[in-house]
Length: 156
Image (cartoon, rainbow, N blue to C red; front, side, top):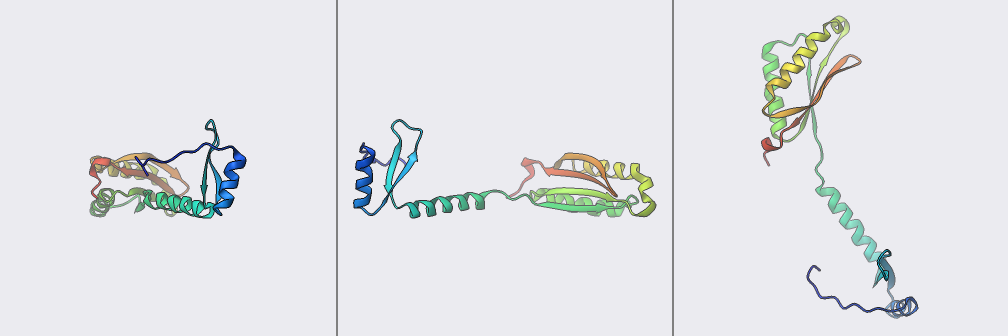
């Protein structure tokens, strides 16, 4: 419809309603704040259907955020750390957010510092792939940190 010449007629409301009835269509107010208000003679149910269709299309095109989780223990060894680091790099390259957390079981809650150091080391290793959205924070038995991908590393 862009660039299309449309014939515009100005009628009083009563005449517009009469024209709509003659054509078995509805008089729909498109822009009430304009001076004078803009109305169209159209099939209202079809108009509503088109609006719903547009909304659905917009919703489908919206990007969905994917969050991948990576779990550590406070005593995670170097090999396991590197293994999980590779997975996190893949997740960030795919454009997913990463939720890294240290789960403290039983008496390991005493090693909060170890958990925080582990997560900060993890964030530092992923510095070129993503950025820290939320620094390590203790919530119950878990210390959680969120990482988001850097826009330049997204491949799609």
